[in-house]
Amino acid sequence: MIAHLFNAPIGEDETAIGVSTVGSSEAIMLAGLAFKRKWANKMKEQGKPCDKPNIVTGANVQVCWEKFARYFEVELKEVKLTEGYYVMDPKKAVEMVDENTICVAAILGSTLTGEYEDVKLLNDLLVAKNKETGWDVPIHVDAASGGFIAPFLQPELEWDFRLPLVKSINVSGHKYGLVYPGVGWVIWRSKADLPDELIFHINYLGTDQPTFTLNFSKGVQAHHGELQAERGGAQGG
Image (tube, rainbow, N blue to C red):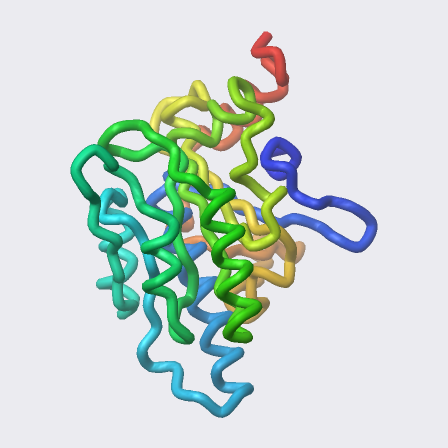
């Protein structure tokens, strides 16, 4: 349902994948781990060192991005904000990208001001950078705040999986998903964007159950979010 809302290319040969979390902080940790592992696997295949990963963000990111970088030993390269422009500048962000960049993180709904970063421009500039260098640096969109606003108020705005380099998106249900804390989701563009070795398989109830989370136990909020979406639909009920 959320994958459809974010325009994931779902078809016979393509299937989006996602998990519910206890909030966008956990969702971002999971997305970051997927980017880091996929980048490390690629570097190993090329016989290159994979001990100095970095991630590019704006200095306006929520603290969970700093936590991810510190906890999982990823260099955080922050684009400084300027007077009158309080979100990440896509041009400056792409200039900071290098071969060790696991992803560029864009925010749809800054914690500080609520502003949307220009994901479309970031995508276009990064496509050109990747073509020039031979790299394959992807984009993650932190849509914790804007993910349940933009699809309804600005459906024409291109920020989601319509952009080819957007590989994962997180969103919070307890901000504008009409659910009390805490619940979030992270959606990957395709199964190929989530390395299999990060997924655990358990059979506590007698059947195989794949799991990719940091937190195992969850409340009823995820089901509450699904119920709200099903009852309200695109029109809001």
